[in-house]
Length: 380
Image 1 (cartoon, one colour):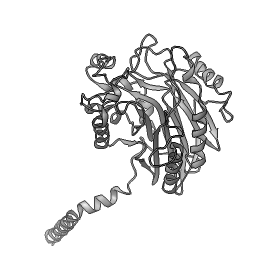
Image 2 (cartoon, helix red, strand yellow):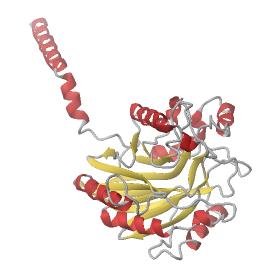
Image 3 (cartoon, helix red, strand yellow):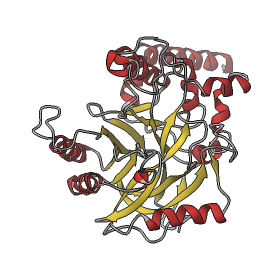
Image 4 (cartoon, one colour):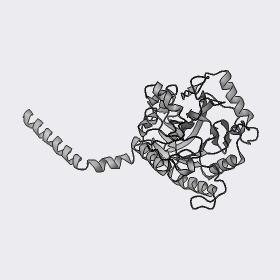
């Protein structure tokens, strides 16, 4: 009797398994649309049971060599680490792995093409690295990148498409002025928009009378469908030999567009391009981080200022809604040594170097009406 019962049970399991297998693709496709991406090691809960989501934002991630000018300072360092590109993240990997979403500005290309468009042949620097090195992102918990900057087209449309295809295949979310990046966490969908702003202010763009109209329209449309909208702007001025302080100064265009984006519905603004840090404003309850500086930067063997900071911001998720909780900054040097740039971002211990970063931020915020006074190193 027992043997007969067991046989019937096994037959029932086999029938169920076959029936499920026939609809397997349909079931998985249906689920993928609704299953949120995994968070960090475990969910963090607030006192009232709300889930806390932590987002880390950094500045320019620029790696790879220059196969046109042959000004390649990155590859020798990579070779010195036996070709393991993860050497770059060794001192920040734990920070990035502990958050739920890391967003960086990827300023370069993932391509093997040697093509250089005529428009780029006069540039001082071009950046590319083999698509296989996308592991720099996937191995170090960098889930999303902005692809709006002045180096993503260093190797033309071919290099740009290689970069996007590589990111897609690796599961890294990207955004640009035409494509929204979407990250899902606890049934909350986060939209990421990105724009290269240099020389576009006030000019027609994307079928709109002005670049600003395009940005406002995109944000307003995104806000209809996504409860949290993050906007990355590649803007501002780089320092020059004659005016080394330029990178620290927030321009009128940055201020105007940043506040305009918040008024349109953006929940967080992160900026980069000046290669220097700039202050943060709290405008209408939203953070506008004008420049995070460099992150992992292969454009200079020893920049005159190697300090930068990461922005970490936390949101509360409860009953299907999301709200701002708090933020902190993590000051760091883009190198593990002061003597040269070894492309290893390294957090500062609290002390004179972190004090220097605070001084820079406060001294350059006097013209900003909503500038922060306090920059906490720890969450509240």
